Image 1: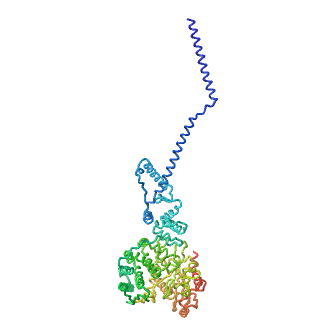
Image 2 (image 1 turned 90 degrees about the vertical axis):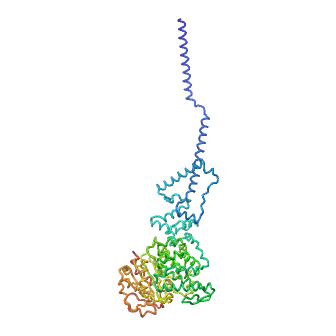
Image 3 (image 1 turned 180 degrees about the vertical axis):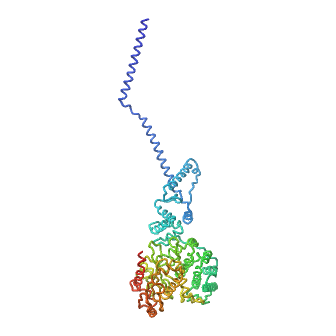
Length: 624
């Protein structure tokens, strides 16, 4: 028994020693394992590379997909405004390209693109509102390239609620000369009425800003332009006209009827009831008929209700056709301009005048080297421009300077009033023969000018508003044809006073420059104004008067105002009538009655003394 127990204990002790040895070996192995680096596992790094390739491809592909979709979205965005809709209608045809493969409009790709487009639209709209970016509101989705942003920014600025911002935008547009042709056309099609008129009244504006007039309606069958012009005149009321205008209108209608009947019958009529159809066998009678009808329409267009009738009966289009037909006849074109200028006095007709295409014609005429053509266009555009001008220029009142929009503040007015058989432009031309006059029209205006107040005086005194007035004189063709009593100088003075006050004359310091009968009108106007309290500003702001060959007959000019300075240039014919007036500077000049207001050159005594008088009289006003 004891032997068995001893054997058991031996085995147990041996097993404990064996286990201790095994544990010891394990510990040693672990200890050795920490000192020796494990072998490289190629499988582990291969898996990592595969993961990187997969995720990199996924990220790159996703980025390319997002970039493509954003660019596609950018090209699909359009400007959702009425002006762009008009642009599309007028210039381009936009076609939404749709694939013929119906499978492309369905499926996961189609839905993903649709949702992505929605998300990007929301991001663009939100960012525009938060950052108040330049393409906020209606311009937040404009489809433009980076180099086209300036065009659309100026367009948006021109429609701003801030008047100063609008004026600056128009000025920047007019000074831009590096654009492509299509950029000018974008502005022409998308700008509003105010911007278009502002560009037309900006000196440096490119004519590509203005669309050509829309196609004119065709004439009625078996009808001529003379017949339609007569029908337009006949459709106007014959009321609210003085006796002389009524006579003139009825004469034009009767003579035009005879002329049309004679042309259709193959006969030529001369004389008639006072209208000479042709002065020679080579002259076309219809041109004379058209002139008579146009002169009657000028007088009708001075009445607002008659302007509405002219517009309603297609007069704007008919006058435009006649204007284009007679490009070689400045007198007809000027009468047409007078009618349009009178119609522009009515603000409710402005949009109709613009839509009919007249602004592009006026903008081109403004750049004409012919002073009369440019001045008639300037008057019409000034009446259309309610953004920078509050005054209204009625028929016969022409602004010679400034004719364009300008940043130069206007501090005083100088008015030119012609005399018998004179006119607003030809009275104040440089003295020269008719042959030299026609030869030098295209030359430098510093050397020769057909209207020295517009060229010489405007350059020497840019802070002046220079106005020339035209009125009917008793020796004009108009009055000799009218059998009724001729209007007195009192009637003309009151008529001119009304027109000049509408033009804002009297709100600034004023100097009057007159020739012959014009001086009598000036004195009569001041006398009548002194009797009316509402005209007191005109009297108080009158600083001086220049008389060129005005027969005063010993009038006491000092009775009008003690603050007015006078400069008198009596001609050879009126020296005796201008003696001993006791006021002002009386400077005799050895020049005849017609040429005394026409200096031979810019450094001539007549012009230099006139300039000196204006500068000295307005010295304090021009300094302020």
